Amino acid sequence: ETGVTQTPRHLVMGMTNKKSLKCEQHLGHNAMYWYKQSAKKPLELMFVYSLEERVENNSVPSRFSPECPNSSHLFLHLHTLQPEDSALYLCASGDRSYNSPLHFGNGTRLTVT
Amino acid sequence: DAKTTQPPSMDCAEGRAANLPCNHSTISGNEYVYWYRQIHSQGPQYIIHGLKNNETNEMASLIITEDRKSSTLILPHATLRDTAVYYCIVPIYNQGGKLIFGQGTELSVKP
Image 1 (cartoon, one colour):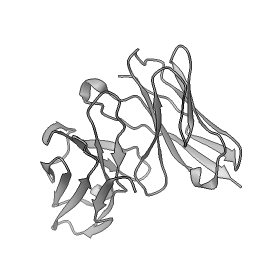
Image 2: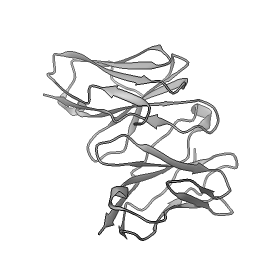
Image 3: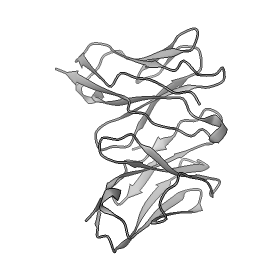
């Protein structure tokens, strides 16, 4: 148990579907992150939220839309995805103080058909 | 931003110590070194971090050279469950402690 819960664990969706990934943390952290991990590649940082404000968007296509309604919850809304978007999507939370480790969830395995 | 360099893979016999090296020659004086590991199909797990002193916790020990240009993560008695990809990372503090992951070291613990 990492303290960061992601749902669903697995998701299969068609290219015309709309779905959302959910992340929840009750560690009292003030920052939340979305990472993408494609097969055989390092984790790629997608979005950073600090105090519920998006502070970073790493050139992610607009078909990925993050939402952070409060400090405990983070969503990634998906629409009109492509097969190459199939990957493991990982959420992390942390405290943006100087030396605080990030805590990761176990991810959502997304398959786009 | 301090970049880290790790060997792509290592093997270790079960029960022996696993020593995983990392080079971070451009690290600056106030930057920490963090270690995470990722077991197949799970999220990365925090292991340990340090600034300049050696650190030990229930999972591992971290040895940082005096010039801070390299470090070694030590798993004192490796088990099969320690088989994972190990990442050495220097967070980017001027961007809120952002973690940028490299390829890491794939450690295989063999019976």
